[in-house]
Image (tube, rainbow over all chains, first blue to last red; front, side, top):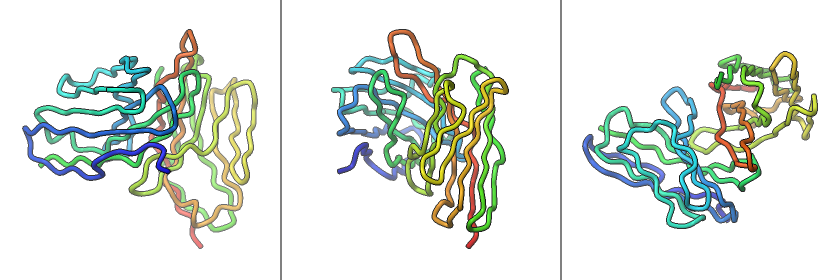
Length: 112
Length: 116
């Protein structure tokens, strides 16, 4: 039943490690997003994909690399994790031509 | 120009009262203004949204008021209930050519506490 799902829900790792977060949506949408929510709860767009093509890249460090194997999936790989990467990462999806974005439950990343 | 300013940062309302959260924007190209509700440990959930061709939209106890000339919009929660206690975010986005879906620019959030 879950519309937008993310795994894992929690991720605790050491500085310098590489980690991935996975996102899947079963809403039939063709556009997916990654947002970052910092410790002050500020939400900011990172990436957007439409039909597996990168549409938005908001000056995110190169250590972050999104990958969309198909329209229903958008993964986020992070290399060489830094303390400042600690945040909650949300995946979202929508239909092209429709601004309504549906968010996943989030992945809380803690870098020690 | 890309910012959306939200106030207040936090709000305490008595059960049954009216909660009002305000947002202001600068970019007149914005044409979609949603409000999201976020409970602790959950993702933001779309509550209600408005486009600038109308001045008000109501869904149940939730109403958006939109003032295009002032570049402001607000969320009113009537008959506020303890279950409404959450963080509320306003947002804005603009349509690109070709109907492209756009990033949401979020306000800074308002933590609402409804006291029983």
